[in-house]
Image (cartoon, rainbow, N blue to C red; front, side, top):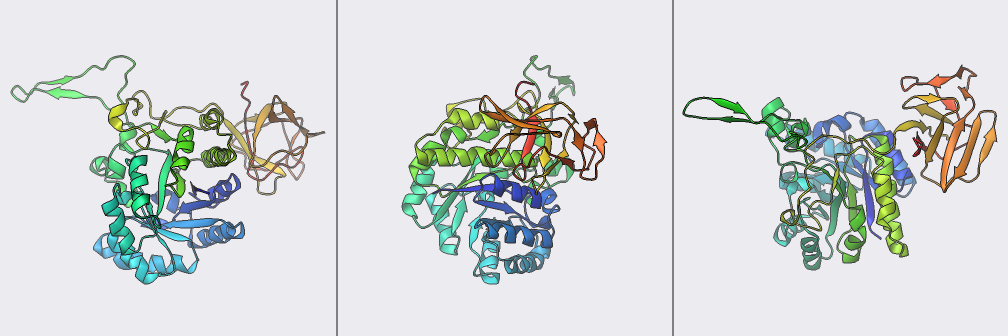
Length: 419
């Protein structure tokens, strides 16, 4: 069965991804990966805790060491790899041939996965890295399914991983310098400022007269001229799995919200399981994925080539609201929630859970009930374990609030679909 691989931006997100169906997660520590912000949310100690936690569930953790180092950093990378190898991760994700060689020398027992930043799109490059010692290649986002099949046919023992969901880069598989030029934050060293998501005003200059004209854009078109829509291949999972060429489906998003991690893992877990069970239903997965914040969706390049269609850019905005608003998240014990938005007594919220709800509950604190195939919760009393009462809880309140009955850990309470 194909692997589902989710982002782990911190320890909580790691646990959420695994709870909602991921077979493996990926993440990193410090500035050695391409997501410095998420790397800062892990310490070596908490990352080791995450590896041990995943292994206790029979699942895997892949370490991102996919930055592009300067000469002065090579010894730092080597020491970092040694420290990470002692934690027993299931693979290193690496982007450059030199670091691949270093990893194989420093930690020969840890498999090496080649980062998408290496831009592999053909059999020749795939064979080069396979002969170098790479056991899995994360293909460039621009690759086609046909080319994936060709690589697998030529190198059947090489594992192939593809992105199926998440942010798309304005440039070729992350080879962008816009952020570096405008703000000094280098994308391929983990600190992209996402300058392609900004609105821009366009000007035209006459070099003979020095006159500059501001170009007025057509109303409704917008000025987000470099803003790519987000990848969403949930409706094509059946085609991908039928090919037999893909070993792992990867979701982008180490800096995304815990709710994003949960929904994407749940939707793609459902798509994979439904395919093998013969009940594939794209409408169901898309309904869930559209509850998250996104930039509009595109099926990118895997199934259709760019010249075969338009609609890959979001020109009017850099973010779209999802169809649900997260109100609260249930703690790891399943007995209380923490507010993420305003929650009031008497308010009805939909339950989004990693596991089926077993039975309805009704007591003085509230009720958990099912209606039209969905589970809901309504509070009669908002109360902390120490007995403090509230009429309304706001997102800044860090007190745990008791549930009417236990719910699976990391369950989300979200705005009802009826508003």
